[in-house]
Image (cartoon, rainbow over all chains, first blue to last red; front, side):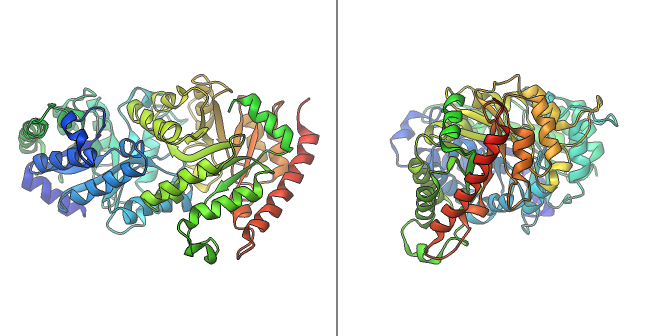
Length: 273
Length: 273
């Protein structure tokens, strides 16, 4: 999916919601556990219930990997079930030397057919570029995350007084373009989103941390939105575990619908025209 | 496996060789491709042939992940085949926010039973600590890698004039101890190994980049060895693809034996007594 198509979906659905599929066998309703593939069945119902409100789905790969080979089968079936006009994100935080990154890219772009993958920048240019070589696919590079540990290195100031995340943005934005490179930008600090937006005005941001991690959706839109929206805001637990029991998918639908309505207002208010 | 046991293996085998299992269906001898699980069969024969010379095996997870669920099955069988007195490394470069890192740790330490995993530091303390909470398991944290892109961020100087890799070493060495934390230290620059050794005198280093990537084994030993050896030097392609055809395992054995002999001399010369 290209940037124009993604923006088209955002306009059509009046939403920039990404639903995170952090599907945990310990948290899904117990009636599903009797089935053959509870993880996929949970995801299937979640996707069914939320597809009209979501422009992206983001399986968190660790949740599937922890289940061994059958977890990867559930992941593949989930990916196959995501409608083709909805952007798919493998939240995998991969990255290694060139030939190894090429194989990670192959795993997520060929063996599976994700639109995008999250990548960690520590190993530099040749760990990121192999992912960018896949036509029509996207890298979503870690820039500024929303967790406690983001203070350890990402905020470290360089000799020139620039935090590391700024170096990552400035260098990496030359490796790709806004057509194949997005950034993970943590939502817990509105002023930080504004700072990142000034450095990379045109790129899409994947914003975790709204909801469970405490960020404000209004701040994200106010400081992060650009002329093509430029935002995918993720909610995982807040949606998929909105309710338990037999009606879990209805609860997820209500929650996704509520967020979509907020997003509609924010698009009206902040989309640069 | 604890540090004392690992050191015991090093003394017993007079070797600090790690064999990298970067097993590629496009590179293994064609006679294996007819079998049910060529990847495992290749690894089985390589392990059989090299176990007397190696103190560690390091499957590069990307190679297995690229093959989908059956790749994970080959990986599991390979891990099961590695003798219990040989240290196993999941070269996976994982790392994410806390609850997600816990699941990656579960994937490699419980679902599978690796002794250790390589982890990327960009997301900081709460992305690394979950791995350190597993009793008897090890984190091998990326510090200074040997690829071109290591110049992009790892060598970036901070306000205090410290390169990022030094910040990573100094901070992270407080999160764990030499009993559960090692570092990836690229072998292509001898003086850099000496610099890292000064910062973390007691930790083990996993050193890639000897052989195919051009580092000198003598320099690594001279500048990196400590009183418990403190080194695992990896060779992947140089050993496992030393020869093709029906006798590939013999070629691997000869190559591993040759490196072990060099290591025996270097242990005699540089092990601090």
